[in-house]
Image 1 (cartoon, protein in one colour):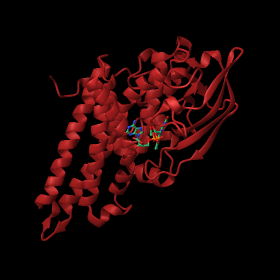
Image 2 (cartoon, helix red, strand yellow):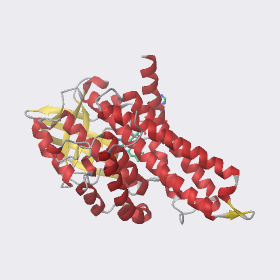
Image 3 (cartoon, protein in one colour):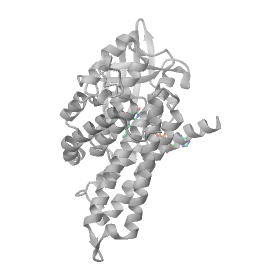
Image 4 (tube, helix red, strand yellow):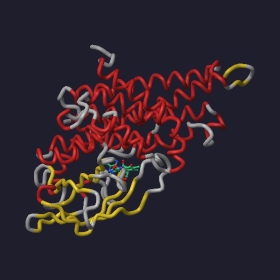
Amino acid sequence: MDFDLDETASMVQASARDFANKEIVPRAASIDREGKIPRSILKDLADLGMMTLALPEELGGADVGTVAYSAALTEIARGCASTGVTMSVTNMVAEVIARFGTDAQKKQYVPKLASGALVAGSFALSEPEAGSDPGAMRTTAKRDGDHWVIDGAKQWITSGDFAGVFVVWARTGGAGTKGISCFLVEQGTPGLSVGHHEDKMGLRGSSTTALHFEGVRVPETALLGELNGGFKIAMMALDGGRIGIASQAIGIAEAALGAAVDYAKERKTFGAPIADHQGIQWMIADSRTELDAARLLTYRAAYLKESKQSFSSQAAMAKLYATEAAGRICDRALQIHGGYGYVKEYDVERYYRDVRVTRIYEGTSEIQRVVIGRGVTG
Ligand SMILES: Cc1cc2nc3c(=O)[nH]c(=O)nc-3n(C[C@H](O)[C@H](O)[C@H](O)COP(=O)(O)OP(=O)(O)OC[C@H]3O[C@@H](n4cnc5c(N)ncnc54)[C@H](O)[C@@H]3O)c2cc1C
């Protein structure tokens, strides 16, 4: 057993770290304040191969595997959680198309996501009345000659206002999870419009929007995977996506712990740096231990995915543990800053807000427990 990253993953991690330190960290506070990631950062990420890291080279991907992807995403999210989630969802969308798409669909979209010609991909599953329970979705796709016509609404869609391509789930059959299919819809398709922009607590640089579908006509060739086979595609995509969100949470927590340690060494009370007080050291020790445990669980899930073994439960465990541990780590980091942790002058205030959503999207903590529990009890 080898706990070190291999040469390729180390190189990819170093490249992401270098880019994050130079281009993202200095702009993260303004990305949060202005509520927008500069498009140049997303284009640079594409140029570095970060938008399609685990995708095959013939589709423009970097083909470095899931462990390297996790390591790189952690570095980008350490710099800016909003940029991290944009990268995570785009990689997930490219992977879904590469895995379930026809040759024509793969060639049409994946190289453009890889190059940044399409700035981002969006994953449009959730609806106002269907989040944890996508089988309750109401959006429909009805056949009309050699086209499908999509009607309905999606909610909470990351990058919904600027993504070039949307993977959209809609009901094509009966009720429940068996009557759902998946479609590829391009930005600008008539009838597709962007709705409400969510005014979020954290992750403010990442746009989260509603999408409205009013008679959106797409050709038959826009169907991704099998008719009525969309639910399975969503679940498989989310298994992989959870490794991404675990990695994002680890990145935010790494930034928070680093800030807490730096602050603890400088801030003095009772004639000594607070880092010398045992109460503070214990908080730092707990955070370091939980962060390492989160990383090991996440690398295990990534390794299993990369080596084509089953990884659904392990990805759920990684996401559950990493996001909950990251929440505790950001909370302790804020506490170590005292009053200064509660104001925007210090980055921990942002980390604390950003980390919260990692326990909610791509399956809440409760839904991860459902997945893990089913895996254990069969
Ligand atoms: C910032 C942000 C970005 C997002 N990006 C996307 C995106 O790009 N694409 C997309 O499709 N969606 C996205 N989402 C949606 C996200 O995945 C959902 O919010 C999430 O799945 C929860 O769904 P819900 O909000 O409808 O909560 P609900 O499903 O209504 O759940 C409410 C509560 O009940 C709990 N609960 C539900 N069912 C059970 C159960 N069986 N057992 C125990 N507890 C249960 C939940 O854990 C939660 O605590 C995003 C959300 C946010 C906040």
